Image (cartoon, rainbow, N blue to C red; front, side, top):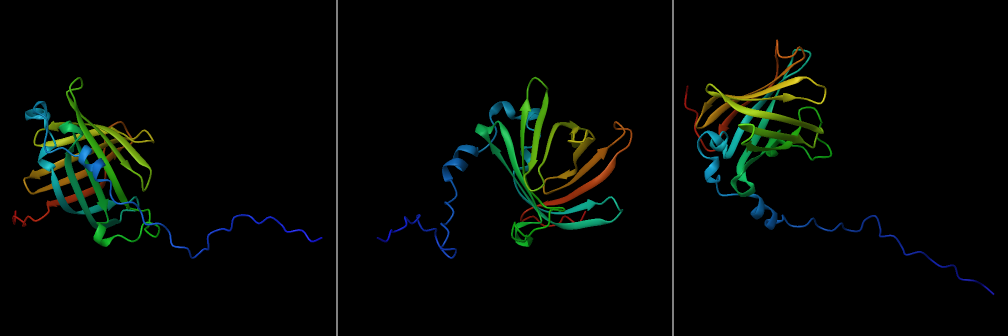
Length: 205
């Protein structure tokens, strides 16, 4: 008597359409975003509020061999977490110039975010940057130094890092990323962002 083999549940054909990704979770953004700072973040405690909005930029990486890599960038800032923090996104190359994520080269590729919040006990802003593209995570502390905003910390290799907003104007800024391997006696410039507020016109200065 012939026997009939039990068949496993057939696998979906390779050509079967994949389900569409879910729509952007509006509830998350509604809960995350804030219309402005809390009253106790005003004055000296509001170090980064001037950045809120969208910026277009050129990012220049100074490479170890002495060459430079220049590409487009975009940056977006907004108040978040009931107005207690500033959340941002730094993207380079800018989305209009990006390759599909699976094909994009890792070098110089940034699609990361910073959370910034004022720590009353420290009397300064704590900063947490993460770039999932490269796996880089940095924790820094930000303070006003003269006309600049200077953020200091250390990277995963123990090198000191210093990130600064300088040449600050209502519609533009120059961002410098430096590192030190000798405890801060000397600094190596690694990255610059030359940013202009989206929709603004060059001042000619």
